[in-house]
Length: 474
Image (cartoon, rainbow, N blue to C red; front, side, top):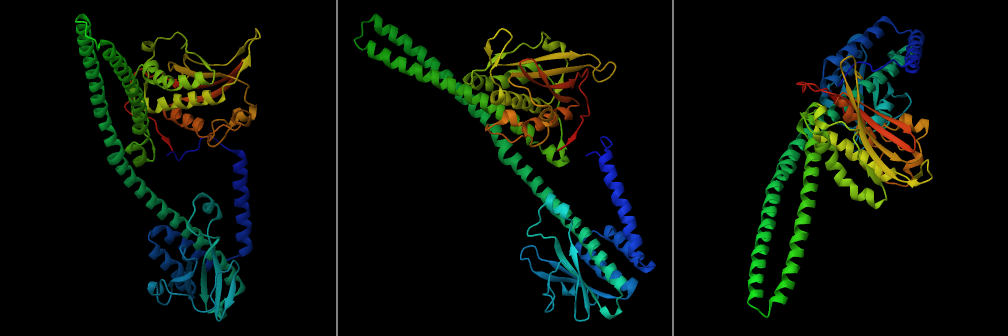
């Protein structure tokens, strides 16, 4: 994951500067005392220094005690029950953890007083609630009690309102960090289970398929023997030859069906295994980013043709013809080292979109046509001097995307209104394509062309397979 900026964003910069100026004005208005300022800084520093929740709770109640000689109690909402519970106070530390609050203490979005105590709401970060749901979380996640209130000035009350807010923001980040840590542990365990219970058993199907192929071949041999015996029976004028030949014909039909089913199952298995093993790699989950396994390949035979084979019947059913001219560039002249499993899924997505969105148009001669085409083109020095690129494209006939749609078509969840219609989809496919191509160091794009739409991606031509692969955060 990169910590560097992709590009400057003036509108966001203006928003940040506006908030900084507002904070400056707020702190001038608060006019906290030196002791209060120091207490806030100490809380911030120590909240970062101590990682456990228990120490964070101690810091929250003992900073006011040490700096201002005021006692306090931290109450938090139990997210499972929605009830307010004591967590820590400056008199008994964690000895009160889990205890019910005194009578009258309640959750409130506004400060209030009760007995000789002042209570301020502890709020979480609203933006974080939208990003990551914490069970039963609300805006107010607790209350902070300070006593005795007779020692508090109005400025002290304002200070503890802001202090309670800082507790909430810091606590919320810690809760999210803990939840994320638990999720990561779960994912790592799940990946190990997938590898053990899905990937490894899936490999055994290769053995089963070989055995099926072997038995189908044996059936062919048996059919050959049967044919010889029938020929001998014919020469001997056996009266049951006709009935036996009818049985032979039925057997041949069954054997042919079995072989056809076997070929289909094998293709489906090989494609599914390729996708499973490339998407569910342990390295992806361990590193939190896509990790490539590059190897040099014949791009047409190992990537394009297997995916086209999957879709050609579906395309034909929708009346879509296929132009498969690759621009006359022999495969052996294009040294490409790619992750075959992931790049294959790029073509699977593009061909799937072609099936969904290809539409009939009228050409220059007035003919109604409906077709998909794919090809490629060498782009000299595209990635810099001496760094050639190769452009692969999938074209479909149909109306052009609008400029706005074209601008957002590769974004997660976006679907073009004019072409999507009622067709099923999530808007994830082209975003996935973009991620895979970028992790290969390439680019994706869309261009309106005569008669239809052209989706393309450009890969750098690798003269030598790279030892280190570029990575892209998921």
